Every structure is written in C-alpha cells, then in structure tokens.
Image: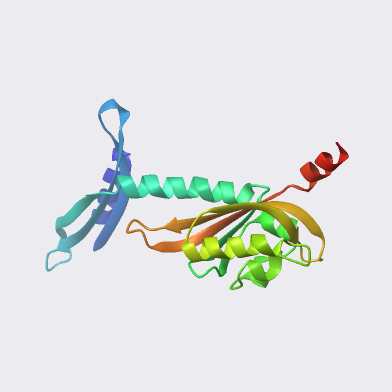
Length: 193
C-alpha cells in the first residue's frame, strides 16, 4: 500500500494536481492494519512548476472498521429470509429487505413513511399484543411476540416479531429495527402433533 501512496504523490506532482487526497493502509507491528487519509495541497511557483506540498495525515482506522462492519450487517439484513423493517424514531418505514417484500408482498415504495402497524395486523391479530407492541415503542424498549400477521393479499400467517430500538452514542433514539420470522410451518406442525 505504500506504493499506492507514492504513486499517487508522484501523479499529483506530474499532473500538477492542486488538491490531493488518498486513503491507504499501513501494516504495523504484529500485522496491525492502520488506515491513513492524506490530504494535501500542491504549491507551485510563478511558472507553474511544483515547489512543495503541505498536507495532513489522519488515522481513519476506526472509520474504516466501522464501514466494514456496516457493510457486513447490510449484507445480513438484505439477504436474510426474515422480513426486516427499519423505521425512523417515530416508527415510519425507511427501509425493508427482500425478505419483507417476499413475505408480506409489499415493496418499499408502498410502505415507505408508514408505521408497520398500519399494514401488518388484521382481524385475528391479538389486540392486546398490538397494545404491548405500541407500549414498547412508546417506552423505547425491545419487544418480542408471536401473533397472526397479514400480507398484502390479506392472507394470515404466524409471525415472531422482534422489535429493537437503536440509540446513538449519546443515548438518543435513532430508529427501530423490526425482524419478522414466519412461524407458520412450526405452528402447523405443533397443531398436527
């Protein structure tokens, strides 16, 4: 990666790039990876010939590690068969995964901005469970329940719903994550026994 840094520096000089930025990694002791972000400005003389660089280097290792973790989590959320809903702090849908679209039959465009309670319950949904669910949201608490859910076509199915509030570093609520697991097969097997 040092070669990437050196080549970028040489190209900045060669092409007289005024503002220059590169992020690269260094391998330190015990193979520890450190990510550095370099930002610099090339100063030239009156004839336009490069004279010197002034720049800074910042350790962005934590940022890179965080970005890597976010990408991993995004892969899980996107590719799981469970239905995943991410809402804002008021409970309005911001994002759903493919599992949600498959299980419930709604696209993101159809549910964006709505509260999930507006489209997941129906006539056989236990109203007491919905009240507990609403209370958990109001109290910014996690919640788990099993109940009848309904898809876009009005077909009911058993679902395990897990609600998780997400807080920032200062403890302020940022959003909620809903994870729905279709329990219909398990419930059918229980009934057969």
